[in-house]
Length: 208
Picture (cartoon, one colour):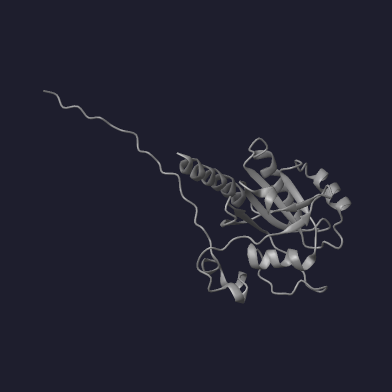
């Protein structure tokens, strides 16, 4: 009797993204007051104004996965590459209602609603998907340093304080940090696109 071999295709498991708390992140990025926090970190509540003059809060991101960055419209260097890559994310996820983008101006005193509107048009930002925002400087800088851990430098959000960071931060539907990426790197942005897909599959499994 001839033996028969049945070959089953190997099933690849979708990677599960790490949930980052302050203790998991490069200590240079973490405010001293948060370095020993080991669980339950969430992005703090925020109130900002977008390119249409609309007030934007976390309610606008409820049930959404989003990517956050920090930029300024007059930046002559890294912001151009970052905005080009945010524009790419905007295009890739154009029809995906679960994914949004949130850009924070680090020079809010310069980046008026009018300036943000012109910048949004330049990079084809989709209304309702990609919010380019301004607001209170101390509020924005606190978000960068104590919520997103997006920058290395310390400061108080005062007149002389200035943030310049290439980091993109992936945030899940529970406001938890799920990944950090170099926004000037095409390879890192491709990794981000893949990992957004992984995160969406994670939520799909939870529904079953």
